[in-house]
Image 1 (cartoon, rainbow, N blue to C red):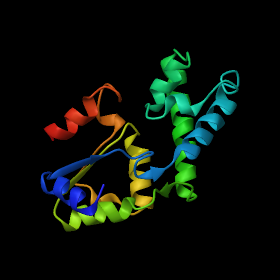
Image 2: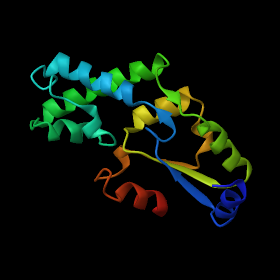
Image 3: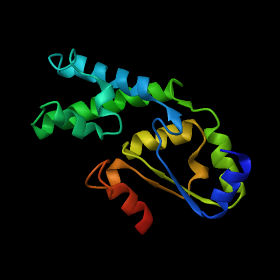
Length: 164
């Protein structure tokens, strides 16, 4: 795509919706380690067969339920452990911006385009990543997995963003 083609597309838009993990930030290995650590600590029987690749974009609790964890208390405990492990990854600087992500967001903001973040991640994890990478001020609004009933691939998060 040429610069003039891109400029033409941008002129017809006024708002952009971005995903977080894998779109703006490189976090897959951090999520993978966080899941494995939680499973190793609390459900070692599930850890050897776990592959994060299958669950990219899923909410944490939905992942554990899909793995066959049915008790609400156990799902909550595993979810808290995974999220705690992921926050440690964020705080230790393991989550990085993807190339040109910040430049794109800043350019959109300078041109007075509206930017929103729509992610299946938890509010706590999302806020930690945005704060750590100094991206918070680049979004007019943020919708997380905590704000909706059905996670992606369902359209709930996008509907919620449009309705706000």
